[in-house]
Image 1 (cartoon, rainbow, N blue to C red):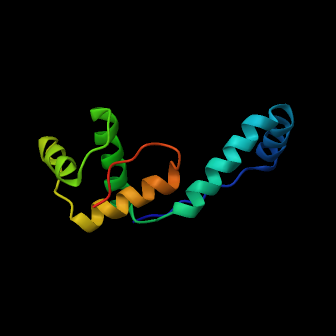
Image 2 (tube, one colour):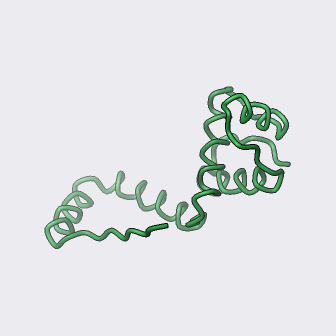
Image 3 (spheres, rainbow, N blue to C red):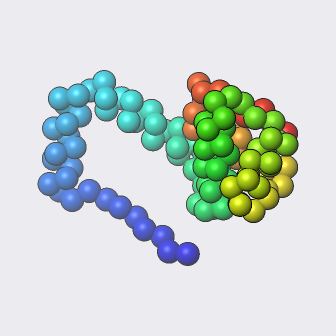
Length: 107
């Protein structure tokens, strides 16, 4: 697996500084989102994929889903089944990233 690190150029840093001065409220929201992501960060692409699929299925249903319902919907999409531990980990990740949103019930 490859890893990519991104940094701003000097011009990019100047533009970012200008934008933060013009839109401090938006900048504050961005900083808060970055802090949540750093708290929940993982480089494990499988963990991220499971969390993304869990979130997608929950949003598609419009309500919280039980682990059994999540597993059934996973199969409907033709995705590999996940273990109870992987579902629990995905739900914990989503709670860390989206603390104020309704999440699927825990395992």
